[in-house]
Length: 306
Ligand SMILES: [Zn+2]
Image 1: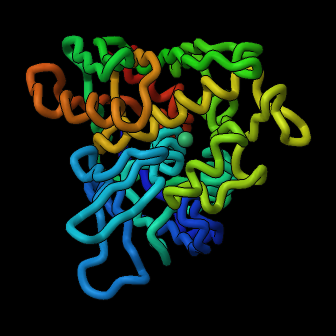
Image 2: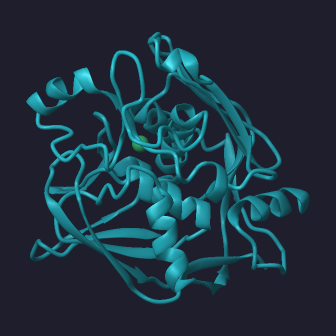
């Protein structure tokens, strides 16, 4: 059978929350099969955990926050995206503050952290959400949909009429049966217009934002030394976010995502719509022997087994 995974041993990192600006220590710990992804706030006494779950999403302004009662965990999407990329199903994520560290603004540092300790296969079958019919949500002009597909692919259209954005691709479609998440997506950083930063900071967002953890854009150009990591880094980051937001469903999707201008709010609306329509999906597992593959190969093989 194709098995669930966790990490081999604990690993730690220290960083800052991009919105709070607060220093945070993060520890990743192995978890047994069936535990799912759970965040644990080590700075709080008593009940202090929040399960990664689409229905726990409580705020989607500029990042995705999940909550269990009064316990909040902010900016979970890049870490969730990395966990999808590595096929990690079960994990405890300990945090000494409210926000997941932003690291360099992409998912790559989380991938490196986990690869430094390795991944271990568990004794239960990995479960996937297989999409059986189209689900579509919208919000004004923005749309997001999931359709049946043997494997997992994601397309995204980024809409922004700006001199800098107009120089780069605004559409990307990646089929993870043939594309490496780690190589092609994980390094795509968050980005923002420098002139919008004071507005965000006025509402206590982006207090930890810097060129160390985001691509900054002025009226004419990308201001980071070294420029972009990928020619289509902006749209790739949008896909990275989609993958992280949808992995809050608790299991990877077998299907095709298509997004037009969608952000964290619409991604979550799509996940919740899917959960409500239980005729639109089912949970499947696969009989596959080869465990030694990254997510995209796994998806390809899982699709081939259907
Ligand atoms: Zn993001």
